[in-house]
Length: 234
Image: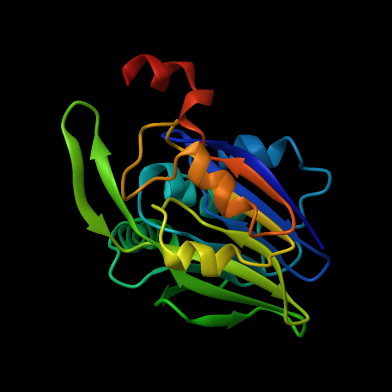
């Protein structure tokens, strides 16, 4: 079983691929997912169930869902595709409703819409289980400010009951982020804000590194300052 970041820049897209011979997992599915998949097409495992775990409904985390489902339909994918998202979030369900309203009659694979609450566990194989953790996030608009909080989850992937990979999604620093990352073999941690930009819905670099030290290994992702466009806008 392996994991890799396909792409991750705050405000653009994030997608992480986890796979083995029995299944494929995508942790978030932002815009550009097909570009990222095609670059890895020789190893992309189509002939197995696909599980898509979405942390929250912002476009940079779920904006590629419609095109990915259509891509699988074009390929004649036959195995189940399960889409998991936070209970109470409307964006993912709106995308699925729109897709099915057009493509349901010619869909080649079973498609499931599964809504998760904090603490829910999903067993995707005999050895692998994924648990959801409550995160803390809200949207914002440049030069307008923060919006209302939204349903948001982080995910921990357990392999043989050991915490193998943890992924925060977008979140501020709080007790649940520590519980999610603690003792993980590897953690993917968002680091949207630079030093001195602390708020309740994104991690700063210092907070992300502090969190990462709770895991055995970690990588900072979803960094805003890796995009020159967003750096200019901010």
